[in-house]
Image (cartoon, rainbow, N blue to C red; front, side, top):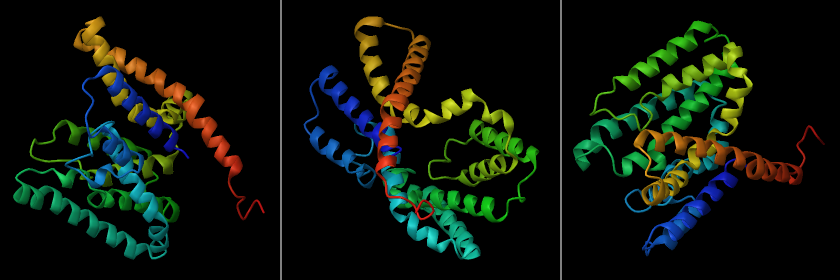
Length: 269
């Protein structure tokens, strides 16, 4: 209900732009659309994962997480075992991604970059963050920790060696600690209306970036002839506009409609 409306709208826009602006049309377009509609593109890394709306590959991975979440939620009753399992899954995935995959495939990539199972450790880390926040609320209740984790993340992003990949959640534990520390300390300036607004439309910014880029790049080549910098800012401005329109006129109305139709909860009864 939350991400579906924007996801399918972005897919439709991408198909329309490809059919109308780019010729000839890929003969396997129908297969690409079918895999995207069914959220299966990440299961075929070499064939469909980055076709059409390439950022949507992560939504395919998320759908696997959503399906498994009820089972994982049951396992969180055994907190220590779950945390140990998360650590094991994290270490195993990094071993496969950073060490085993380059030796077997020649590069750290291919299926290892996109398959849902290899990303499961990141979801487990997120759930572990929820456990820490709910059951150990004072563990990271020091405001300076949020800035420390943020600074470390920025530093790691800036100095990342070329042969090290962050794609499979190598620094996900730091992001988890950052989010838990922010949630524990209730940092006021993050509650500003502008940041809340950007947070609300952030999924739109993510999922519409490719159709907006494809459309403007075609227009720029044929008509506008903008410089690289001007094209970037034009694309970004249009992306914000499209994401805002989508949020208020597509995503929110559909979400409200389904909320009215849903079954009442136990507390409501």
